[in-house]
Amino acid sequence: MDWIRIAGGIGFLGVALGAFGAHALKSRVSPEMLAVWHTGVQYHLVHALALLALALFAKATGADIRWGARFFVIGILLFSGSLYVMALSGIRILGAITPLGGLAFLLGWAWLAWRLPSRL
Image (cartoon, rainbow, N blue to C red; front, side, top):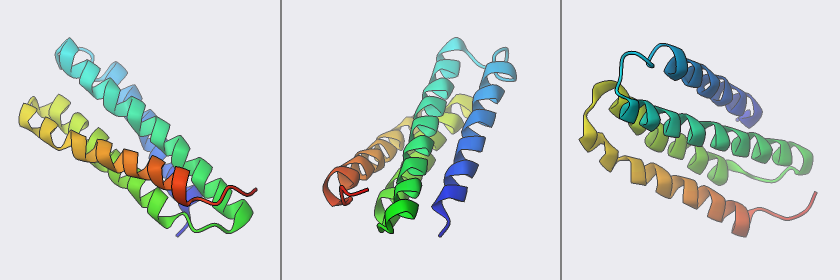
């Protein structure tokens, strides 16, 4: 799998969603829901960069990053995705999904700390 391209696509989407929130949503959702949207974008972009760093590390060393990369992608989908949908729909029960994405992020970082070889 080409994790560099996936990280690039996820990063592109994060910037696009951030711009959408800043411009198109500003007058359409409450300030509270706009803050929820921006939290989703923040975590989305931070983990897009983490995924890119993992992908570059794998390219340089040949390390197998599949599990760490998967955890970050799942985290973006569940954490940021649930916040995006909640901000757009106002359905607050979707916030129950958000911690599952947070758990995926934690698993990704734990995998990075314990399983990734520390050679470069």
